[in-house]
Length: 311
Ligand SMILES: Nc1nc2c(c(=O)[nH]1)N[C@H]1C(S)=C(S)[C@@H](COP(=O)(O)O)O[C@H]1N2
Ligand SMILES: [Mo]
Image (tube, rainbow, N blue to C red; front, side, top):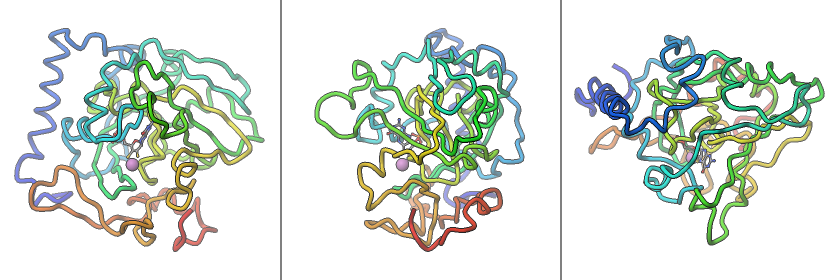
């Protein structure tokens, strides 16, 4: 059995399903009707393709674990803050501005973008730079499909992403200065085009929970979690490497590439192992894998780089 089954007893077999069923019952009762939006359209939850060759066979974390232990600093600094405060976020209507080196720049309603892509399930390992990890059954589509729809110009070398700025609904954006909002991230074009790179609109077959970055976020499974920007409102194609939030905040600790690498420690902690969320009282650390286990798909992108260094 995969992923630390020795200290998960039989919980792993029942809990994800149980959590999912609870949520379905809530949906059926109509309480969460306001949360139904993007996935109700073409390629809705019903039509999500499963069994992707890119999905891991590892046991997914429970819905509860995935939605109650989060980093989303727009809603506060504690792991429980996103769940406690993201409920007030309005995600419908939602549009994504796409600009820069593209043939068809513009402000795209989310429904329009989703009508030109194919949603599928991708069960990915997720490794935060803070040395914890989960396995998450995302619903999403390859970023390459979206880029094909808007038409990327040959001079484009990077893709930059920006998260929503809305202090009225995001308490972490009010008060004392911290991050220079919006939260920003970026990828090199070949990373953006890699089939593992997805825009996720849900998890466990449901619309994306707000604390996980509703209604649409980036997922780059071979990179530390901070690359996977949430609640994206802007995508820019550029010929210059964009500055990302964590590199801007602390360049001695966080880089642009941020590929998962167990041989290069963070200045303040080891990256050799990771704490498996939900692995129980008795610990549950596992070895961190180079490129988070996705080396077969992505190592060639970095063939010229010295993997004993941090980028
Ligand atoms: N907009 C935004 N995106 C973000 C963050 C954030 O604070 N704001 N945190 C990042 C970090 S550090 C991690 S580990 C992941 C957490 O995603 P999850 O809560 O869905 O597990 O989101 C990333 N994306
Ligand atoms: Mo993170």
